Length: 449
Ligand code: IFM
Image (cartoon, rainbow, N blue to C red; front, top):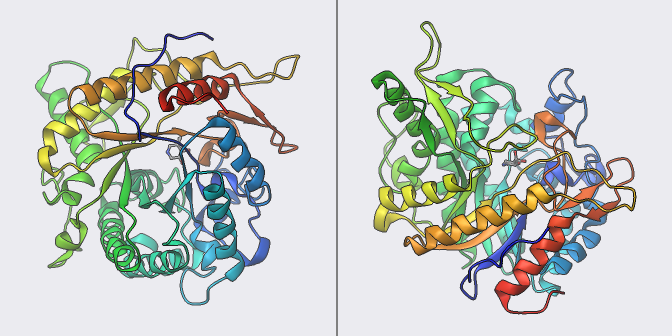
């Protein structure tokens, strides 16, 4: 599919792809890896739509060299992966599993050999099961265990990782994992899940201190955001939208940027101790922004346990996840962050942006995905427009390099630039891979590799 050339991005803009450990690595019981909450959850009947799990996934643990070659061919300058806590510390604390750390060292060194910056996320939802058994993120101790684990990984890789990301989407881990129970560990506490937010943020702050003590690489967190669109102008709908915005977009970012928790949600903050907010507000070098779509909100029906109701937004094309494709929402979001947080806002990198479609190989074995090309084209233009508005954006990572295991959706949602045959593990670059390769080469002013 032909698109008009993208506008110029500055030299040094980071072009990346993102993945996470449980979604691609497989090798769930290899070389001493311990169980995570996602192993437990996925193996529990009825939790994942197709009954699948991440035992094998994309077998990246064994095929990482092939995946690095795919990234090199794409021309990306950075790869955002996550370290599986239970692979390096099988019980979450105490005894280290050397083969686990060795794997990440091979990965990092292989990336550096290709001139690709390793960007390491430390927690992408795969909490070691023994840590969960001790209370998980409802327990304050988990924040300290997380900082110890961060220190351990930084001691081994801190001289080579170019950007650390402490947590991925703590809002989703709180809301789906502990609010509604759709994700591991499957708790349905609704607003009583607030301690999970606070302890993740405390763990983040303690980990920032540990990482800074070990190495000089910049530190970030990857939050997910969704511009909120009230369905009408009725005051009840506007109030519901404001409440949802506080929950989704401000609950984590306000305290990270020194503003404390939004008070209008009425959370019981008794878990917050003196000094915690200072730990959480440790300066960030980069704010990671994961963006997929805006959210429609209206006032709830009477008797609803929640102070808002989420509603589909009309007028947009939709992905296979039924998410609206709304590049305008990305510009709106970046402008909102810039306006709201002003000089406290660190430089932003878009740490995830992508879409799922039902991509299938054609008779010649090619995988055409024009909708993904249109998606990426639109979202990159939106980033550029926000930069022209004055927002400091220094990178864009596509979710995802590979079709992968999509949590409660199992193997039914394909987000990759590269198609994966889940029966054989065979990788086939889609047409979006070729499109992005050309776009990156043009932006880097180099011929495509
Ligand atoms: O696959 C997930 C990823 O793990 C976190 N962000 C959203 C992606 C798509 O749902």
